[in-house]
Image (cartoon, rainbow, N blue to C red):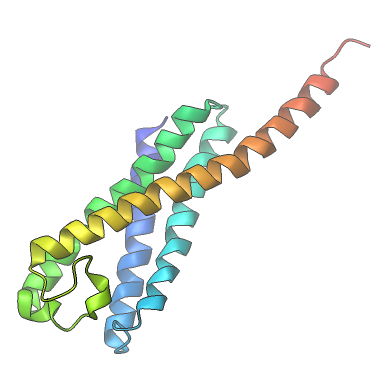
Length: 157
């Protein structure tokens, strides 16, 4: 598990999601909740880069790669939450949060920034685990096939 790879790919995810959020905000589309699903593309891309890089470096342990993927996604989540708090405070704090659809918040109603953060953290943590686990299943199958070919190629004839 390479910490630098985790941090770099976490930063890539963060930049992608932050830029997408700012574009949605500028275009007046922040109330379109289904556009938030596009965030998965950035998470999938960054986590896949981490796991793929690990396998290229022959770091083949399932659990180690799963943890690397989750850590990559959680890195971007922490950076994103910090940035969102700063941005929301800059835009007016709790008044700014009231401009979001009620479906963004777990409990509905008029959320405080702390409640919004908890919702984002839970959603992001769940996405981190789901994406990492799914990608590990994909890479596990590929690595098993590559290892079979290597075993056949290196057998004495």
